Length: 192
Image (cartoon, rainbow, N blue to C red):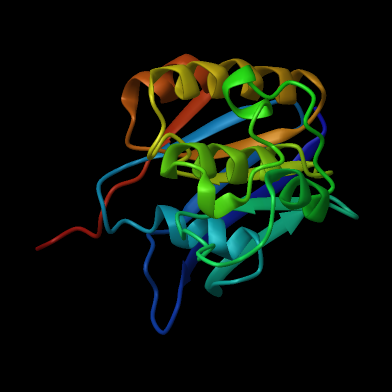
């Protein structure tokens, strides 16, 4: 097994710890889901793996030379930005092969002329297709219709089969069950 990421008793946060200690591994070709209620630190953990959030204790080990792609829930402002879908893909090194027809036909449109769902899927595709060994996805099914979720589900399997490891944060139980090899349910801090 080619491990890409391993954590031991990792506690991460921003100004203060936001997670419970976590032991986790993600191997090449594996899709791991992180679920749990709001506020347990799922997004914070992804930020820590990408070097954005603070590690308070424990450790993160990454494979040498690991390339990480992170999709966040933040929606980049595009109003008035003269950037086309094709240009967005080029910025991340992503290709258009495999895009669904309903989006491939709109690649030369400016991002601010696409619907919110189209823009979200195109941004997601740019991350998924970027040259990365480990892909971190934070609520990727937000703003997607049924066709978008179905296409994403199939493509994640293809990406894993090509050797990438994927770590998926989602509240969409059906999606997580359909796509993930393993699911880790995070719990909040014990009250007592």
